[in-house]
View 1 (tube, helix red, strand yellow):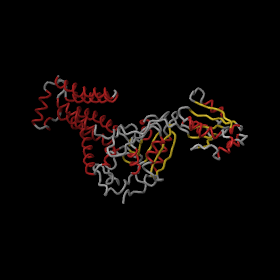
View 2 (view 1 turned 135 degrees about the vertical axis):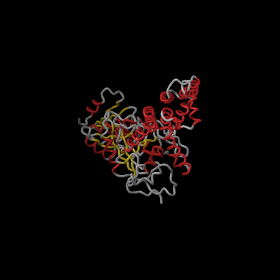
View 3 (view 1 turned 90 degrees about the vertical axis):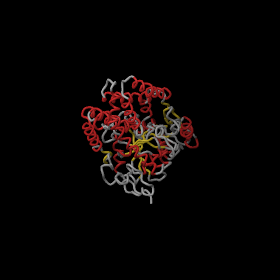
View 4 (view 1 turned 45 degrees about the horizontal axis):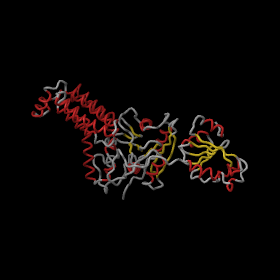
Length: 480
């Protein structure tokens, strides 16, 4: 469809927020068709930066034909901060929807960015709490988010490439990377996957993730996501490639490895010994939340001889009056734990906290006193749940809860042999995942990045001299 004023008006027929008017260039010259979307642009900016200079007789008073007006516009006759000439209707529609005022002629159009600044202000992170780091977080506006990143990385080597994703939403996505630090193949691959993302709209993070990752069927997260610009900038410094999408207040980075989901931004803000201790606790919590319920089911059902005598007698005594088997107890408590968590998330904060307290204290205590569940089963499930809350990534925590249920079922069917088979399958699944051509379990599977990743311990700053060569693009030294 060619660009004409009539075609543009026909496309937006029925859109009552579509504003248009015909103005005379210089007050006496050729007629110009101006159009924009109300609420998306700033009305005062449209009047001051586009319409006012367009109707100025000093500037446009001598233009008698559309061709003369076009030539003067191309030469900068309108002093909008950002002006671009487009010759395709798709580009014109994208510009209008993204907050531009368009001056439409037959066959071409000039678009001026006058996007409204009415949006949610930059606030303190709500999910990733900051103790010593930055107190700002991403918002839903792309340019604000890229500006937050550039305020931390001032180098011109910070490259940014944009593309449009979503057939109906036409959301703008920005791919950011540090030239020389990131592998040059990774941003090209990221842009290719974004352009091939075949969906109506990219309005939720999962829509983007499922189209970018190598194994979308796996519940384990394969993109590092953060709401903090300082963490996003740190990921770029490590050699990763970041993605920010209009309307999603979260930044994504790739490639992502399994150990990265057990690190936090605050690790770099603490003394390396304290950060190493906390990181080891997270790995111990991983083992506890994943294996403790299944191990208790296997030992209590199939291998009671593995327990010390006093502990075994205590377990037997606590279960004498309980009508359900150990497996049913654990599975029931795990499901109840998930229900309480879901209720606490969906209800308003005061009500959600009340429900959690009532469920954990009153209902749990009443169930024990009524001999419905044994006290030790409550302790096992509570310890596993608390250990799961130490995961920095909620997506990783959700994947581990799914694996925990499956391991309990395996322990119910085959005891310790079931747990071993379940763990073998889990490790095989994790080792089979690729993240932009790199092994998901790097550096646990070996390779060049094994010593530099700081998987279990944070290296001392004066010894952490090199970036991970697995994802690096050449500039491997991070400090002298």
